[in-house]
Structures are given as C-alpha cells and as structure tokens.
Amino acid sequence: MEAPTVVTLDGVTGAGKSELLSYIREHPSSRYVVPSKLTTRPRRRTDNSWEFLFVRTLPGTPDFLEWGSVRARYAVALDILHEAAADARTAVFICTDLDAVTSLARRFSLLHIYLFRPLEHDDLLRILRRRGTDPDQIRARMAEHASLGEDYLAKLPFVSATILNIGDIAYLRRQFDTLMGSPAA
Image 1 (spheres, rainbow, N blue to C red):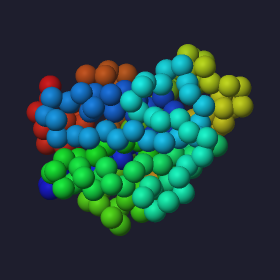
Image 2 (cartoon, rainbow, N blue to C red):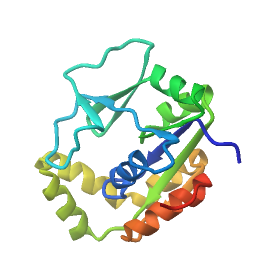
Image 3 (cartoon, one colour):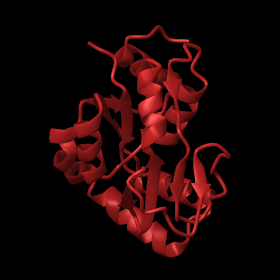
Image 4 (cartoon, helix red, strand yellow):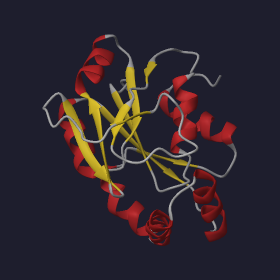
C-alpha cells in the first residue's frame, strides 16, 4: 500500500482519538506531521497545548479546510498538508465530519480511520466529567453514544480502516503501526 499523504481519525467521544494522536505525534519514525487545528470550541481541562489553537472565529478563506462537529467549528491549514506531502510525510489529525473527509479525499491520498470503542454509559459519563464537559455537551455526547452503531454504519462507506480500542493503549498503538506498515515502537 502506498503511504497516504493524509490520515484522519474518526470515532465517537471516548474512542481514543486524542490518545492515538499523541502517540503519532511522538512516533519514532518522524514520518508523521500532526497539524494544530483551529477551533471555536471552549478549552477542556484535558486539552493538550499542541492539538488546538482556540479562536473566536475561523478565517473563512480557501487556505483552510473548515468543518463543524458537536456545536463547534474546526479548521486545518491546507498548506501544512501540502508541505507534509511534498516532504513524503503523512499529516494526521482528528476529523469526524464526512463533508470534510470527502473534500480531503478529493485533494490528497487519504486514509480515514474509525476508532471503535464500545463504552458503558457510566464509563463515558466519567470521561466527560473528567474533561469538565458542561451539562448540555454531556447530553449531546450521551445521545451520540446511544447511536454508536448507527454512527459507524453511516460512516462505513467512507472508512478506510477500523481500529478497535479495547482499553489497551499498547494494542491501539500496535494496530495503527500495523495499518501504516511501520514497526511498533
């Protein structure tokens, strides 16, 4: 398989997207670029300093690919994705919006990975509370979780690969490395 120029990570709340992204960012092969995304959403207690740039509004220019997800807007600079491709590196970021994924697939060699993690109701609630998620967001995320199977089926035609999160971070990382054809760290 030819290495994709862009990899997007998808999945519902608590699937392990940010955990996997942290691993990819520190990957020993240095073949990956993890661009910071602009976002209009409020900062969470659990946010890291490199994944997001928090803004009030997005640029609204063709230099950025923009999308919405759970009452917030996101954007990624397209020049970073093009630079990564020119350097034979792969840009990896979280994107759960199918319109954005479709747009990326038209511009780049794309691998769209869905992380699937079946969580019990109480486990998800614990994750959301640890993040400091407000009650309205908790309700929205719990509704999203209730339709986990439907979310996956709706996105299945766009999914290139599925990673199963069984709660073992090392296994999550090995699946990614195997999928990308790189040795596990």
